[in-house]
Length: 178
Image: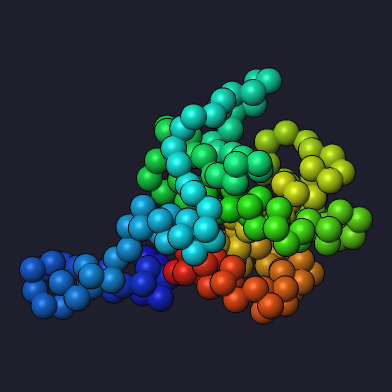
């Protein structure tokens, strides 16, 4: 069982949801859809379902970031807990478009870039690899920060240092994490 700080509430107090303690704990639970809405609002990027080709050249995509329209689209079949990592990844593309974090993974930290792309479908090269690695890093930063730090310790330090000058982005990502 996860520690209460990981859940944001104390699971054992949910035994009787009608009790005062139970109601207090239920109020602490934040729905995935609310996390998504908050991230959309804080980053000022719309997050919508569907309306994109999910299968391109034999590769299935769970989501996309439309660069010119600045909109995140998530597959309609991507639901439940599987949706937040997709939204976090696509948010990484949005953030990277505006703040160019990928430059740090373009010609340096190549080993970290490779580790970030280990579970990524396909094999992007050059600038695309750096951009996908950055988006994967943001996904991990939101959903599994320890794994982000393990896979890319130098980029993790760089990213957090840059976020100090981007408090709105930092707050958006940390609130999606918690």
